[in-house]
Image (cartoon, rainbow, N blue to C red; front, side, top):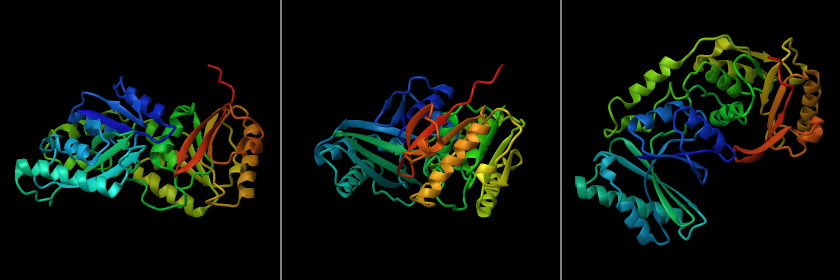
Length: 372
């Protein structure tokens, strides 16, 4: 099987490094998706279990030129659907069309579903569609259709610990990627001075303790009769075996008591509450005796949480704090194009990342390298 791992715009390199660390070395990126070839069900289970920043795990069943609905129907019908879908299976078709002659989503969905059912009916007879769900993605990009079977179900950002709502949350997959793009390691102090519902501190703790992000949730493939019986069990056992115990110095701060309550609750659900301290404190009042540390924050956006002037003042306050903690590394995800000017310093590095559909910059402000 060939697998596709979608990645958020700007995070493809992060997901590729995660795949490399899991032992998958040849993973070309095409149209924002990483391709992993010659995989088994055990690989499907491992990738769903361990990927921290990929969006989901798809099986690519076919790829073919597609400029007419006849080509779409024949290409979809030609897949070996009975190798995956049972007679009881409920087939759900979703579509994606970019820069292609076929762009009517309802028609693509309808014709794709008809082709799948016709193929399966030739094998099983009438389809019952009363059992497990199989979500099929028909991705038509540049007049080429990729037929993909979603093994994940709810996106990989759904770790299972974040169940209480808080304004403008940062996706878990994005938060993990921001940590990977920093110089933080578990021996350093970690802070998020605008922690909100606690996603960044929790993801830092999960990574430091080597807790697999998919350990406390289920996946779509687990309900499929075609999957090897031991695929998930092996991935789960690997996840339990690699977990480590260590001391951590992780702090989350916020000025909203509700945020602190929610963050504390989420950390407990994630099993990392004893490793994180949450403080009710304005970010600019943060003090520490730690000479070296890393702060990663997703501060409030003016268009969603506060007035623009307040957001700009936050940037100025963070610049003042950075100059006080002159051996720290600071990272901020913000759509504010004047962030560097307000912060009072040009960023050492800046990359574009989309958060909740908003184009943001991830600003890096480095401190000096610690002496070994």
